[in-house]
Structures are given as structure tokens and as C-alpha cells.
Image (cartoon, rainbow, N blue to C red):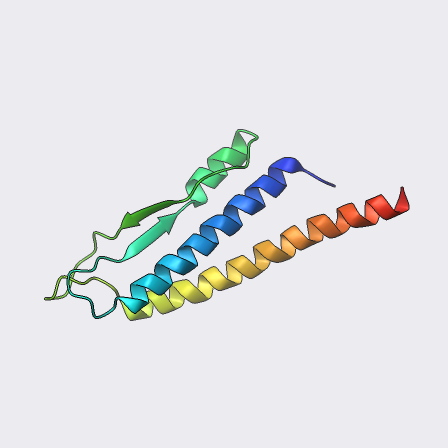
Length: 113
């Protein structure tokens, strides 16, 4: 019922997704900033490895995109960022529902004990 690895993994996923939301919002805000390189957040591979080793805690990493740039040196693609924001928001909702379900089960178990 209450698996601390799962809770740590969900917590790490929520942190990574929140960081990705902020990075994507920053990217969109800097769409017209000359020389701006889009930020990217990665955590899924590290999270998978953490769960496999029985830990669940994994930090997210932020890097600058090396993708092609426009003439002004900016490489933010609004279409890509829009899709990323939608996907990230959906994943965040799923993770928060999973976390809520975990704690709901714990509350129920505590009431019946």
C-alpha cells in the first residue's frame, strides 16, 4: 500500500515536471530574445535508474538546447514549446492524482486500524 520508493519517485517526477514547466515558460517568454538558447529539463532516465536500484529519488538536470538557431541566435520553437507544455501538464496531473491516491489509501488504512 505505502511504498516509500513510489512516493519518492512520484515526488521526483513532480519536481522534474514543475521544473520543465518553468523552463518551457521561460523559453516562450524569451522567444524574441536574440541569442537565447532554449532550456531543456531531463529527469526520466535518472528516475528510471533510481527506481531500478530501489531508491526513487532522482534530480532533474537543466541544459541549453544545441538545436539550430534563427539568424538572431535564438532557437526557441513556439510549436515545440506549446506541445511540451501540454504534455508536461498532463503528466503533472497524472502524477498528482497518483500521489493523491497513495495518500488517500494511507488515510483510509489509518481510519480502519
